[in-house]
Image (cartoon, rainbow, N blue to C red; front, side):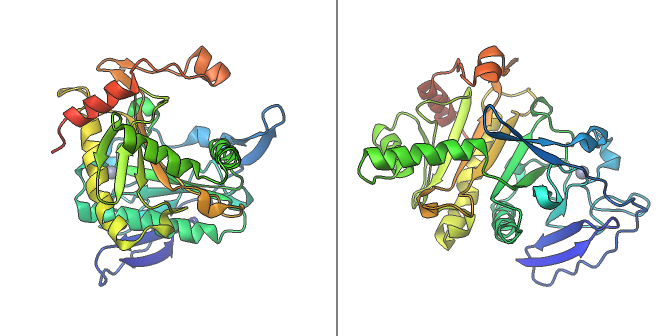
Length: 348
Ligand SMILES: [Zn+2]
């Protein structure tokens, strides 16, 4: 992998990740851009102890441009995008409309492929591996950022999930605090450790799923994927390396080599869940990694959580009164049935 770091016209960082070591990325951003205006602010909700990012400048962000004005496609003569080069493998840049920036963290966009009409599931294993290595390198870089406590690499896919650009891409949020979800997991792990005389919650959870077997979707040599016992979403899969590591940096070469095959298989199953002739399954997929500055960091288990908000071919799961108001999810699809469906639906 070759990494080339450069700057866009407004000063934002752009980083190319290339599979070939002889790739030359010296194209200059020739757009007349104003300096980036970002005024994100983090406020803490005193009742819940949770952080909220207030980012009013995001209201003006790009919303579904026509395909020939896509800001994530490579630049062409007469049509300049966020990527000055006429080609790339994987490209990462600071979001022009960040929810977090400066001393409130950082938001990055990860372009998975220069091909506008592909999706992550269409990538080759080699391309998916380059994305994995990119996520890993971003995590390493952002861990050095003084304001950053936690790095979240994720992909939102589909209009239904709020995606405003069709081009296959993901995002990285580098938070200046530990997120509420991670706080909850750390607390649960701590309680489990105390209650069991030192056992690890993540290990015990994965072992229990493997012993039960009904919710396992894919079982590789180094990775296992299952629908969790108490899934929140109609179709939800958690993917763990079999050896516990705190973050992407902890994965070894064997785990990295197998990941693309398992993950592409999972995504292709997701796309087939509701049968042919439908728009692709909307989903959220994100890596849970240990925050940087905590005690017991190695007890956290890196894993990926993938879920869709679609519950039938024509129905979406909305976060309504119980979910939005009280945080209590009502799931209409039994996790065992969801796992069966995901096993039956053949990936190709
Ligand atoms: Zn595009």
